[in-house]
Picture 1 (cartoon, helix red, strand yellow):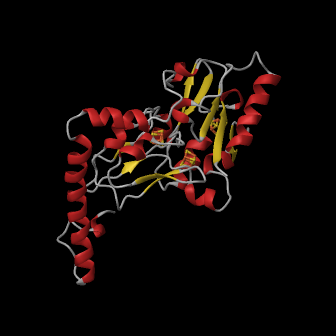
Picture 2 (cartoon, protein in one colour):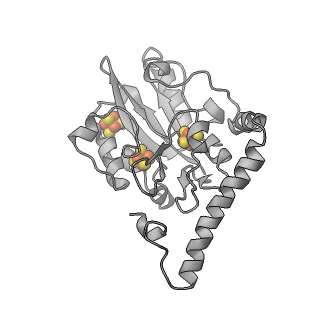
Picture 3 (cartoon, helix red, strand yellow):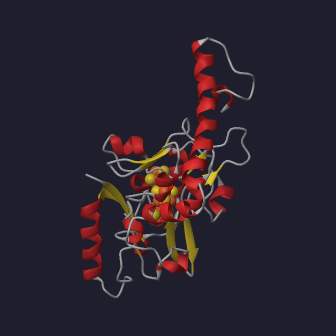
Length: 258
Ligand code: SF4
Ligand code: SF4
Ligand code: SF4
């Protein structure tokens, strides 16, 4: 069964403990300066926004049919059956098509690193695999971020709206946006006030992404082949070096990644 997160902004107190727990989980730095940053970045996978005493989280939506994964020529991004959209840095060749394709402007690139990775929330896949809640849901003191089965969270969100119709916008964001997502949102103010797009189709976006990319002459077959070739050559060199028991020159091998 597919897991999901339900974030109910009306229960959120803006404590940002979810940000801190996420940083710890992902071995990222977190201090007052990072807490004050109001944008997702390569070192901050989730952010709690504040406007007129209202709160809203932003993070990767872990889409059901992710556009980011659909454009990745080497399969570095992948949707898992349990919900998380995971990333394999060993496969990634740095083309950054995922950053262009994502309708939520989520993936970020480690521009300042020698061997950069794409970074985003991957919905704590190790925890989910072990039937644990995500770090952000586990720490949330009010239940504003809740982890569970997607269909059960949708039913619960519908019930909350029915029980308190004046308290919520009559919409659960993420049930159908971009074909559905594993992050579901409830709010008392329109989602667009916090930058969420309301023009997204109910169809999975990969259909449209492919059409757009296909419209660029030779983009998919040629671009994919060229970049795939670069990736293959790079990784083949590492494999050969490993098999022969010697290291690549400094800066070229996996050992240079950290
Ligand atoms: S929100 Fe963007 S990065 Fe996250 S799964 Fe969806 S398409 Fe991919
Ligand atoms: S699900 Fe995990 S990675 Fe995503 S925001 Fe929550 S703690 Fe961070
Ligand atoms: S931990 Fe919970 S209450 Fe605190 S900011 Fe995050 S979602 Fe809101």
